[in-house]
Image 1: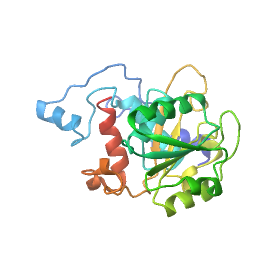
Image 2: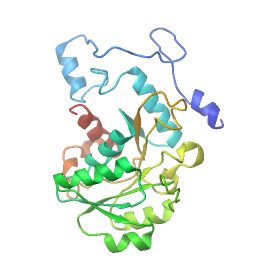
Image 3: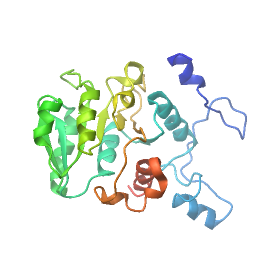
Image 4: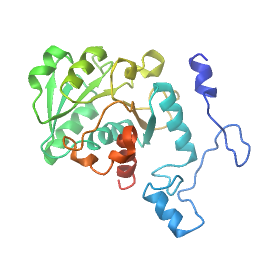
Length: 254
């Protein structure tokens, strides 16, 4: 299947309970279960199901599955905006004392976020060009993420994803790529070594510009060592789904 056909028919199901060929828009906030114990298990990510639409619902789940398929990732988590996606993609792995390396020609909201993170002890180091040569001198033992926009907004500079990913991985650091401007139609960053992809889906993915949303997609390829990323302690049991499991838990409390 080519891109447009896969978008519609790539192993996606409609609503099996009603036979609807397209998943309906769910406008309910909460979901009932047969027992309090089952509801507790769903809330605590110990059983599949829906509990509250802020965390997930059938409509959001359908969107996440499509985005994961389009980006060739193992799963996705939808967010209320692109900035929420950028924020959660980073806070899912960072803690006070950690450092991020990023290009300086970023979307203004992202630059504001990095400034705000200083209050929580998280420091961003900026480079004019996101290249291995400019990034490597900035790497320390506190560097926990490299963040880049694949096509910069507004500079339109293009990142060599493969080269930057290879450098990041040689230091045990994940590459988080904002692919909002590129979209999965132009590039699949995971094929070039990116570990996490974020989108402000309010833009090209939405198409109509009539709704705000964001999404985080995980490649499943980065190994989250709990000794280096302490927040992943207890999530090792999820294997390559550890990042998504932790992210889903975080989303349940914000």
